Amino acid sequence: MKKPVIAAAIALVAISTNAFARYQDCDARINAIKTKIQIAKQWGNVGQAASLESELSAAKAECAGPAQAARAERDVAQQQEDVRRAQADVDEASDRLRDAQSRGDTQRIAQAERRLADKQDRLREKIDDLHRAQAALKG
Image 1: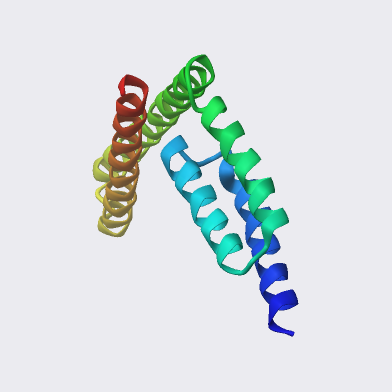
Image 2 (image 1 turned 180 degrees about the vertical axis):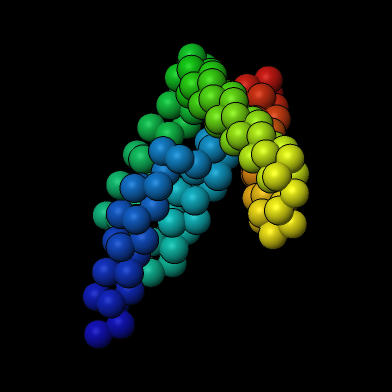
């Protein structure tokens, strides 16, 4: 009774992991596949282990050379766009704060200051994401 349940759980993990695998960096993806292989072997699921071995080979091939570089370049470009959008949001929030200050409405000023702080935090997060993407591209 336990083996079918375990096998179903392993299959579910494999399917869900595959769905998100394209969003993981290569090292994380390869490590996840290796972990699944170990689990499959522990439970004696030879067919699943063999399937995962071929998936591991494909992941290693995909993560090498031009494919990885192209993926990293796309990620950097996307992160740059995210930073541009976040900066535009900060600029807009700054404009709204200046407008509220010119009107002298303390309630709107406080609200605009909170929104500006939130937008600045988001911008910092996007800049950090960009730096990580650039680091991945370099190495």
